[in-house]
Amino acid sequence: MPRRLLLLLAALTALALASLAGIASAASTGTGAQNRVGALQTSGASFVGLASFESPCLRPGSAAGSVQIVVGFCVAAEDAEDTVSLFKAPQPGRGASQFENGYSAADFPGGPGQDSDGLAYFARDKSIADEFADSYGEGVIETKVPRSVYESQYAQFEYPYQGGPRTEVPIPASAVEGLNPFERIWHP
Image (cartoon, rainbow, N blue to C red; front, top):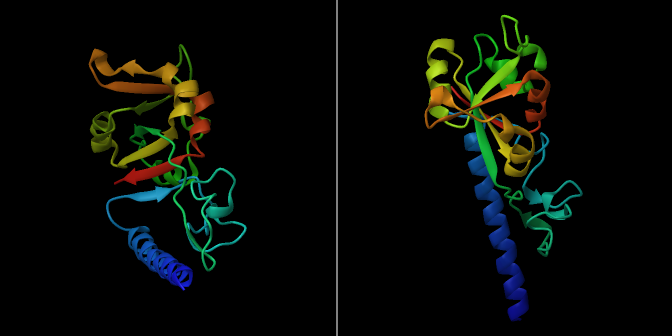
């Protein structure tokens, strides 16, 4: 009898958590001071709900991959890899496109000896991007890059902003599209 009670309590807890998570995600989509895109999930994927072949609970290596599914429900958190935030103030007219579609090398033309230098200027410090956002009027887009990717591909571009303690990251146009798979948050 205690095992049945334990299973019933586990099922009710999973159902309650699924309900709460649905309320929290519904309240945060498209409203408030932030908008999100990416987040390493495809549209329509659900982290809480009936377990299916697309459920993160069944993915190899997922945080909940070893959790027994009780009454068909599973509550799983996405693997929490450490990330590095890069901030960019999009130039006028490019904010929505860069948020929704990511960055394009074509948006950063030029090269050495030309009018434009062919670099996409990001910052590790949001305050730098905020300064440019004031004049560009497009807000700031934060891109969350997994630390392992950042350190292997982008850390080499770090530079002290105006010689001070804050850090800018001027990324060559040829490398900027590598940021597109990662979560973007728009701070209007």
